[in-house]
Length: 210
Length: 186
Image 1 (cartoon, each protein chain N blue to C red):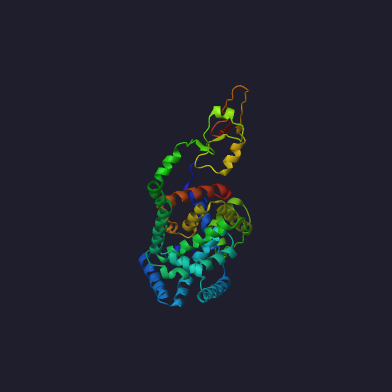
Image 2 (image 1 turned 45 degrees about the vertical axis):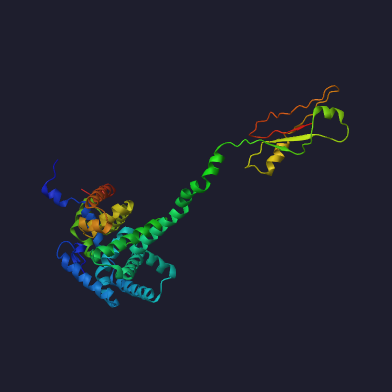
């Protein structure tokens, strides 16, 4: 499992070997469709962290993210017989995850308590934090906590559509075309939403930027 | 003042901050629990059979079934809405035309019509010998209640004179649309 760098590099559908990854997934899907239920576990192991990450960043709640990630895999398992391989498996399962999360968030009448994952210690000592600490003249531990809260809060202020696009591109590292396929919109719409979302985030996080 | 290359290197962008989110990862213990729960839930879905309505919806969600349902709905609408409209002019065209005109039929009913003349009336003394003329404003579409209402506007008029005996007809001033006219003429 890759813990650093672009998340999409673990399977890199558009960058490294999209056809290979797609074919590998399709081969596993066909096994499951043929009755080898255990083969589905390979897909779970491969995508569970990406799915969890997307849902976690959309909900800002680790318990909800865990439940919804499991729900996503169960839905995919139930529907895998109808998957025809016209699109890549990862776009298909991302779409299930996003639709499941959106339905959940729309139903949720009030905002829930936000529960965070801890930021990896290796990352907290990264250059970005060095720069932020120097700029804000704050103790690093306090800054990490504060920035995490502000960032989650800023993401929650975005609309669901804008939040989805910015998470898929900036956090998951997906290409515009892949996001367009997942969200069933045009590439132009994806770019426009991304631009607007970044502008919004810039205004929310102004004190840390520059 | 323009930023120097060094400033640009040290400046923090939104993308840099967002990238920090990649490091918010659960630990291994979380994934162990996640896998156990997921396997349990998947086993439950394997064992549990879908309720009949879920199976029905899934069956109906097919493209062929959907188009069949739409076609059936269209035929049903045609049967319910279009067919009566097409049939109605042939079967009831005449009555429609009749009903479209205001039916102001005034029916005179002779209840008793013996041979009668004023001179005879003047000379005869035995037994009532009169004619009741009922003028009704009722048309074919009115019901019995109309007659009750109509009764309120009816008048009986009898004019006597020792020398000459004349009969006047009574006229209601009420418009025909709301009531009728009746007279009892001696």
